[in-house]
Length: 74
Image (tube, rainbow, N blue to C red; front, top):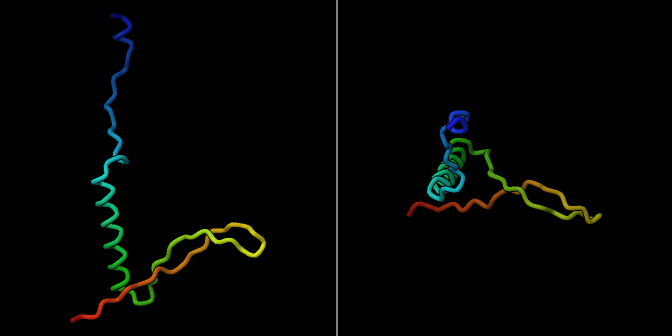
């Protein structure tokens, strides 16, 4: 019984990184935030990071602009 008394009990923190629902919600929020920035600021262009091999054969990360597909109102 003395061993049980010497233990400290703490609350278990559930890992939220493995929850697919929360991942989808965060992805949706990120995309909606990006759409808001595009609508508010006409000079904003979203970018992605891509690996590019230069002339010497070294791989470097560079920012590339995303292709924006504009839909015209019908």
